[in-house]
Image (cartoon, helix red, strand yellow):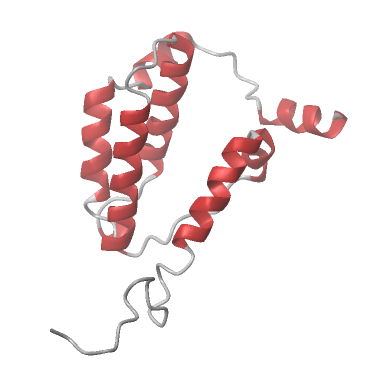
Length: 142
C-alpha cells in the first residue's frame, strides 16, 4: 500500500490546480467527438476503424451520465487522448504507445479486464499471416 501511495504522490503535479485552465482545455462533448473522429482519419486504416468504433461506443455508453465529476473526467481524458494523437505524416507511421505503469496501477479490476480483452482482440491486427476467424473457407472465391 505504501508503495502505491508514494507513486500516486509522485504523479501529482507540484503546480497548484487552476480550475480555469482545466475548464478552458475541455471541449463540449459533440465537438470533442467530431474532432476525435477527424483525428482518426489520418491513422492507418486498421487503427482508424478500431479507434472510431471505440470512440462511438464510449460516447454512446456515457450519453446518460449525469454526475458532473464523471463527465469532466470523461471529457478531460478524451481531450488528453486527442492532444496526444499524431497528425500529418507522423500519423501514418503511428503504431501506438506504451501504457504508463502508473496508470495501470490506478485501474480497477474491471478496467484491467477490459484492457486484457482489448489486447486479445487486437493481437493479430498487424500480423498478415493470421487468417481472421470465419475466413478459413476452402480457399475458393465466388
